[in-house]
Length: 492
Image 1 (spheres, rainbow, N blue to C red):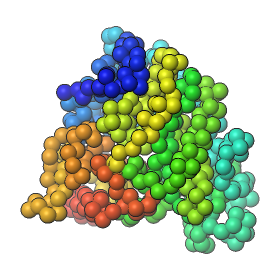
Image 2: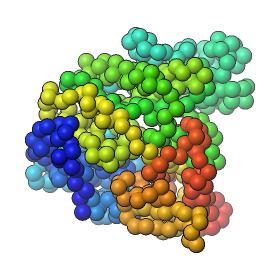
Image 3: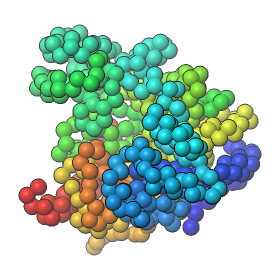
Image 4: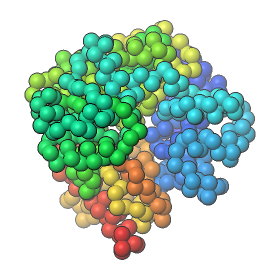
């Protein structure tokens, strides 16, 4: 059954909410992507919203109780096995035929757009919701974003940019002296994910590993070297509207958590967020909001609309906060914040994102009240773990709600399907969701995260450490799945 929004509560913030929802529902919206769960939120307030995904994971079964799902693998398993990205999916004639068959015609919703996807959709005459790459290319790359931060007069990380050839000849000692201690190395003009995009350099061994990887990659020309900050990784969501920029609360990011790394080297891997953790001042929170609003206004001038995120570094010694990266798209932190908003009966950022892209006026919105509501916290957290070594799913693991009570005769029990924070009844409950592989499914190794745990409580001690219970659960599930995969393939 579809989880309804509360129109009376939403109307306290947005008096004409029912009219806005009616405008949103004039044209069916089909969200397209490889990971379906992170696209679920609009289903909680729109009747004409559905999702097209590639593979039938365990959480698709749970999500079908909330909205209409279309799964390529159900009818075309051979085609689904070849799809590893949204761009490939859009170019496939089976998907194109499906979209053309929709009556009435649908609008496709994407997290982010590429030149290829835009070209394919425009050539096919398919309507889409998203930002053209030309309006956000300036903030995508590390080097140009750092330059923009300085240009806008925002707090700036101490950094130096080098030509690739010059950097590769620099000794560790010289770089450390120039930057003032430990440092972080990234390609300035190329986006690289996974475990080879960011290098934390504390000693010559770290530096030699970095040089070895960058020396073998000739596809970039610039390197940015930034001072290593002792502190926490944080982020804040923003949403560019025609009349202003909305923002969420400053969120703690969970980075390189040992139980989540599951044996992978700690190279700045993002695993989740904790919205209950807030060990910084109101002044820091206000500075972060100013950073997001300033960058959001710059993006608005370029033609950008809707959701984006700014990663920041919080220096625990000085209390300073620095913008580090811009993600002009739906981010990894969005779904947890939106679930928290729905639990509080507040419109989530996806609602405002759709307003902006569908041309629904926001002139009557009270931005101050909405921003205050979007920053209201209730304790919740999510964390994933690395799939390294778990090459196939050899245990039946239903997505949904689990309960862990160390004092019970059966400490860990499955409670049933679930997709929202409302399905977690107490702090002993947690949810397994976000592409939980079906039994027998192969698991990709070139991705940093497997499915996530969602808790209705805070679990973080810092960006790099979680509490004993959460750590035990992450480690137990990871190890159990690894052992099952190794038993299936004993030589692996």
